[in-house]
Image (cartoon, rainbow, N blue to C red; front, side):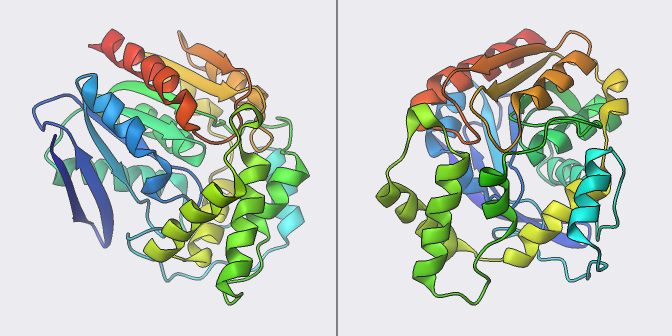
Length: 301
């Protein structure tokens, strides 16, 4: 099985990526969420899709992992006022938007000489994937959306127990042990109740992520990009590829109602709600999740 790593020059930025499987197989791009490195897509998730006949590209979005860090400063703004505007579906000032990040993904496709592909986006990545499907329809074969939203007004807000650890950490200069303990708190808060990882497992994985890259400023700018983009429901009328929307019933960060809103807005979209699943990809659910997405991709072909 081929598995290569590289860095692609896309406009003014570099995107770190991994390519799994045969380059002659249909391509699927995995777009990860807010502040999340490509490793959050489990190796087993990638390998299972390869076994099902696809080549897989997972990559670090701008400002995270091994991809370029954006130097542009964000405007100072009241955090809670920004949240209120976002809940109303209104945009906020941001150093870049999810539309820019969608353009990054299309640029990566071009560098890799891939004309059309399937897309699976998780959380913020699902928002980016919706933008790609609407704005670049000639490049899209199918759309898979995992625990995401279209940010339309008045969707249920996140549970503070899951949201606050995401946006308020101990600070970039905190000791490593404190940072790892915070990661355990965060992953436990947003994770799947029926498929718990142990604190030791979470801590070990968080250490791998930290050793690869640690850039809290990028996490903040991703958050601003989501709020700066605002409501994308209006794009749904431009999405005409086979679409499946998947969400965990126990997701406390993005409520299941968010995926229900996506599925309702995209004509012909299929909705799958999974018992016991939160805002993560447990190993035990990899066979089911990859099966759902592969079925949708085969339907497109």
